[in-house]
Amino acid sequence: MSKKENREAEEREKEESLPEEEKAAGPAEEAAEPQPDPELVKARQEAAEYKDKWIRSVAEFENFRKRNADTRHTSYMEGRADIIVKVLPVGDNLERALAACGDEQTKKGIEMVLRSFKALLDGEGIEAIDPVGEEFDPKECEAIMSEPAQEGVEPGYVKEVFLKGYKKGGKVLRFAQVKVTT
Image (tube, helix red, strand yellow):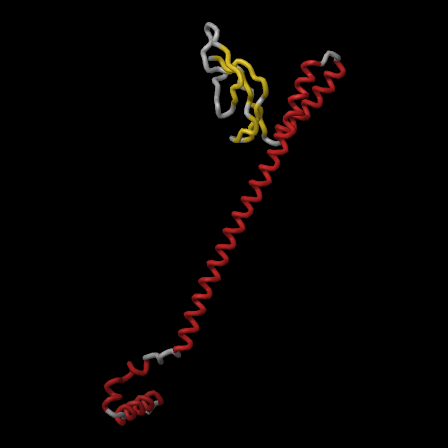
């Protein structure tokens, strides 16, 4: 007899010597897993809860960090715009000085300073609102005077600009003060 045949014979003998209940249950009962320890089940549930709480906390912190960064950026940009608004009257005065200047050398000096002022505004992305001849837009202009429309001129158009307005992107930093035809 071979070893394989010997093993098979031994197994048959064992099965024959088993009581009837165990023979009926057979190998299926052997495959059944033992019941896990209740403490282990409880510990796994707690671990899953802690992991879920940790993931949520990380997500909340990340959202907070992004909101805080956006708020800081917005505050910084608004602060820069506030400073520019305070500097705009300097540019207005330079333009007035240029218009009133009679001396050529002084005029050239004022023009140079005015060019650097305009370059500063361009560098900041600020553009002038100068709507002469355009339709009055209350979103960008403030009407401080009105004048009856002459023949051939439609009412509701800007006739003259007293003080230039400025905007950055879509936000008006200073409204243009204008005279409007009525």
